[in-house]
Length: 620
Image 1 (cartoon, rainbow, N blue to C red):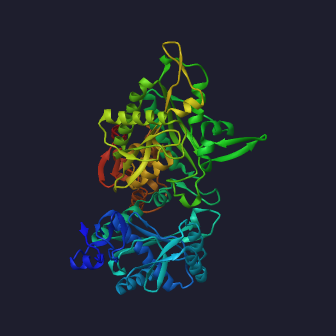
Image 2 (image 1 turned 90 degrees about the horizontal axis):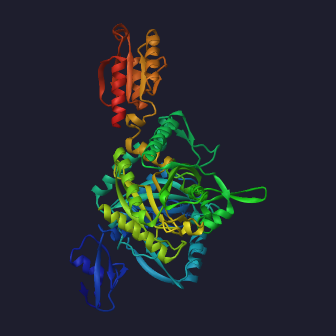
Image 3 (image 1 turned 135 degrees about the vertical axis):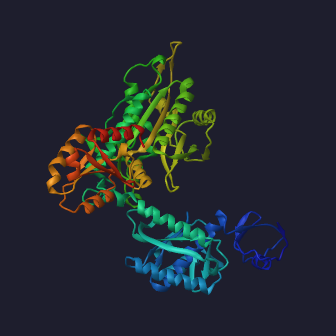
């Protein structure tokens, strides 16, 4: 809309009862409401329910939290406090570790600040004045942040007795923040640098309505209940210890069995689709990583070592080993496509602050494959991978979205190569009729990619499968094939994973199923429970029969009551409990109880084994 010179936007909003408006765009620039137009202007009001409006609300919530922290901890120092998805955080230094009681006190103080309805007031200072202001306060973090700013003038915002460096804009006053909740405290290095001080990051959630906040808090409760780290410990799947090192996983027998089942499934599925198994070394000469471009474009994520005065890089990806397999002999056009598959162990130098259970680790296994094909085969090969993804995600019950990630700034190759590769991905998706979004600038350094983002049982999105089209590495490594005209031609290389990191996918499975795995991948399918000690001999015979039939079975040997043994089975999320007592011994059968369904009645052992086999084969 067009508004006249001299109009105060905040007064206009109040006069017209535009209660959900928190900021505005004046001639395209986002501004605070409390300004008076200095000329006739195009004005677009920003609603708190929009993404921009929520970001402004949440960033303002971070300032209100900082004000509350300063009230409770007068010597507190502050780094950054941005809006994030669903909320906000502030990195702070208060001289001690904050706990749950501190969060309650901070939240209580925030409510007082909201109730006081302090207006947010903006002013500008020279960069030097801003530095002096924070030096006097003794806040070296703000001083360093200001010194990194290129502008000669910076803006400050004040609400009540709290002033902070900020670009803005903000909500008109603290009273606009009604629905918020402080959530947690975590460690965060200043500027994300492990060599800088460790600060405390206080997280909060903020929404435009009470219902939205309540829904989000319920969602967080569900997330907490499904946390793979908690369930991994409860179900005895894996552990991570400081003694071994952060980001390094110790797989326990049940977790290792889960891995084996998924990897075995993957091997069989790849064989069905014409892939050949290969295996490359975990360290390769650094010269190879320089040739590929990894040394210049991915070095910060790699580990290096020296052997006999020669430098080696520990592989973060499997592509170079597969390139060497292809390069090992001359290739004919009749051989192509070559599809090489490896469950390859890789290592990546992740900062400790981003490590998270199985989801973000330093050593993991990729279900990695590389397809070397002729340009005329490229479309079919990409479609084949897309179909592979669809089959596997459908088996696990995952829906998913697709994105094409395009050329990043940090990349190799010519514009022509990138255009060919990007168009190949787009054409393959169009030919399948699948919808996709464009994710600008997030491709691999050597080529664009299709990213597959699956949705789990509670609506979260996870990046797993990826399909990358690459014209650059075949050129760098002089990969060729002899075409039907007798001339050497360059193949196209498709990098792809289906599950991605096995560790990450298992974390997603744990949280998606809440540890209640489908029978075909359950580490333990059956637990045999003798009612008492006198029934153990027969129960052992049942155990041995089931084990010999290929059932993954364990024996309950604890000297507890039957009700407790059944409760243990429920807690351990065992799909089937087989109970053996006097009646079962007399009738030479077993009583079967299924998790979440209860008693199924009595079966002969052969009937039960058949029942298990049918359920496994259906992959329910």
